[in-house]
Length: 302
Image (tube, rainbow, N blue to C red):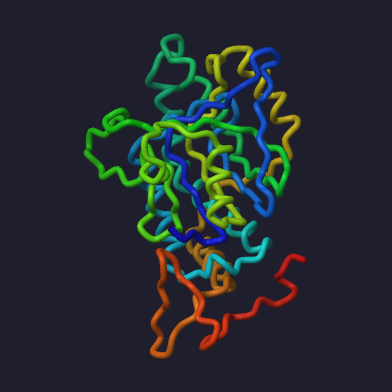
């Protein structure tokens, strides 16, 4: 399987942050050489994500529509364009996620007794006003490891029987067929982030954009407890994150900004007759017959 150099990975599984047994600090791993990772965390450290199947599928479909209709050349993006794309994806998630969060908050505040509420739901409500975060890790830098576990069929409530194309999976969103990591690495029901890094390094990925919708709970610490809050505050103080802009209510303005941004991305070269060249699951160059669109020096990060 051939993978593009810039890969967008959607994680819609269970998630857990492993901690040191003595200090309760995060277990760290290193970013592989020649790789940069942009990671969007949908929930804060120590908090469970209570997203529904409908929410997962809506977000997955919206992102797929955004990135897969543009004939983008994923092998030729500059570092600046990768950063811009990450922010665009984060804004898309915020707009879709807002309705679900508002409904959960409403049920919590007006329809459910807080005394009877499960701690993980209470913690989600109390942190939902905090913005999502973009975390950037450069080659060889340390980053927190995390364990992702497959969600088994029927584990998430789906009374409307919505087709589950993303729920419970780790999906390569900008790869033809959108394969699930668990289908490729057969025989495993969980995988650490460090293991994914090694796999993608071997496959030639240099820019990894991770959309992490999994829970962010701490190993051996119950959500909503004092220990969970102390750990979360310590992590947020130390990390260097980028806050994601709030919901954009002007749809027309958002569409125009999106179109302008993506129009500047390098496109897949064409053969004579205007057909795109396919090969091995991704688009490839025909350097002898075509020319790729050049990126101006002002838009290319040195």
